[in-house]
Amino acid sequence: MPGLPESSVLRNRDHIEFRLLSDGDDAPFLALSTVEAGSMSWKDSRGPEHRQRLYDNLGIEVPVHAQLQQHTKLVNPVSDKTLRNPPVQTGDGLRMPRGPGFLSATVADCMPVYIWHRKIGEIILLHSGWKGTGILAEALLRYSPRERKEEITVFLGPSIADCCYQVDRERYNLFRASFGGRAVREEEGHYFLSLLQANLGIAEKLEVTSVYYYNPCTCCNPEFGSFRRQGPQKFSSMLALIGYFQ
Image (cartoon, rainbow, N blue to C red; front, side):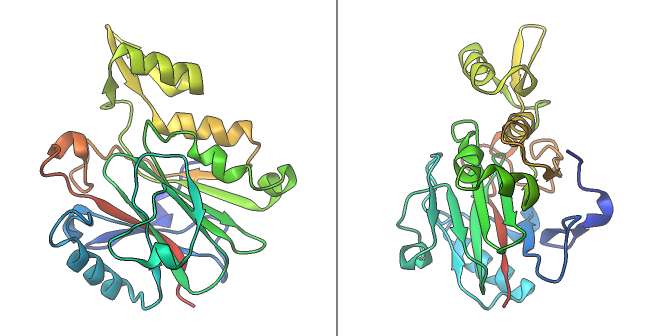
């Protein structure tokens, strides 16, 4: 399960674009805003303004769907409810058939997970933090084993890494029991989680063969918004996007 090469990571002033290795003319567009774009939180008074400016910079003139994220494992289809601003439907995963439109999710240390069904063009976007880790399995189990092996691409975006994701022993034990020893680390009596390894393990268990990741630590890197680094009152929510312009 390879990391995405730097040549497939396109940095812009206010966002990063990710080009999947299997990209073709029908591939969706994947992006993540950076701190430079401003906070995308609906709770931020300027959040809607920051979103619209990002859409304008990207040339997005089609519907953008969103949800009220609550660290759940709910994956919902797009609907009129997911077009409401601010969001009214609860969920941390959205799926959409091939067609003009984008899925969005806010993250600030949690992991954005992008899924693309290469044959039919269906896309899914997930918000996966420690509480919601496992939402990837919920999303993938809608597909047959053959589809997961032959037609699904999963991309795991930037999140807090195990260098910074220190937790208490109880949470460490829960995570280890759920996702295995690769998903945790203990060092000198301190306990750490790896969202990347947990999600790689889920994809491996479900036999997804096309999995990529780009996972610099959002807490270490000031280019990204981080709840841990910036604090609960000042953190900058980034916007993950996947979709089709037409």
